[in-house]
Figure (cartoon, rainbow, N blue to C red):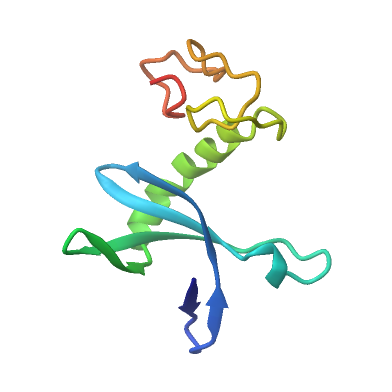
Amino acid sequence: MYFKDENGNELPLAMIDAFDFNDDHYALFVTPEENLGEDEEPAMYIMKPVIQDGEIADFTMPTDEEMEAVTPFLINRLEQRHSCGGSCSSCGCGCGCEDHDHDDCGCEHEHEECSCEHCH
């Protein structure tokens, strides 16, 4: 997928996650590995899909207020997803953790407070 930056340059991006937060849909995009230079870290972009006729027609940047609210949620989501140390299998729940216990997500929150989505 290609997006244009503020200067009109095309940026290749790959969607690595899609999630809901505060009744809105979001997607997380990164620079694909094949487009990175040596020792370069991928850039990350949070975007909101624009839905037309039930299909994603485009993506827009969240407002500053939306970014301020969604960023801590996304950081927690990514930390929870990678808490297994990168050891992954296909248990079917989408967590990616080989040692995932479906009754306990492993987060430090009580399940009523948990936002990791693994234990719900």
